[in-house]
Image (cartoon, rainbow, N blue to C red; front, side, top):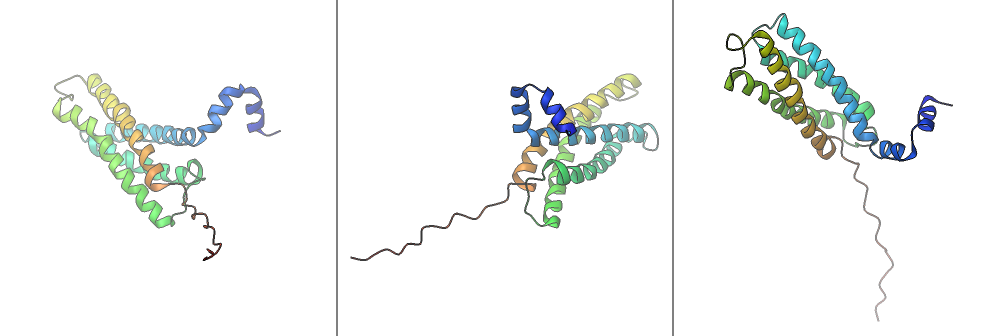
Length: 175
C-alpha cells in the first residue's frame, strides 16, 4: 500500500472528497508556502546583512529568486493537468504575471516604509521589523497570491483548448 493510500484510508470521506476536488489549489498553496519561506529567509537575510537600509531591494531580490523556484514547482507539480502552451510562451506569461505580482507584493512595504515612515529612527528597530514583516511578508504576499492564483489559471496554465466536436456531416436532402 502506498503512502497516499494509507493517508486516504485515514481521512474521513467528506474531507477526502474536498481535498481531491481542490487538489490543484492545495498544490498551488503548497508551492506558495515553499516560496513564502524562501522569500522570508532571503528577505531578512539580505536586509540584515548586505542590503542594510535597502529593504525594498532586498525584498525584490528575495521575491525574484522565490519566483523562479515557484515557476518550476508550479509547472512540474501544481499545474501538471493544465497547459498545452509552448514552454517559452508559458514561461514568458508566468514571469509577466510574476512581475505584476512582484509589484503588488512591494506596495504594502513601500507604503509602510515611505508613506507611514515606519522605519528607524522614527520607530524602534523592533517596530520596523514587525512593520516590514506584516507589510511585505503577510499583506504583500496575500495580495500577490490571490492575483497569481487567478492569473496562473486564466493565462499561464489554462486548460488545454479541446477542438470542437465535429458537427454532423450528414448531407441535407433536397426535396
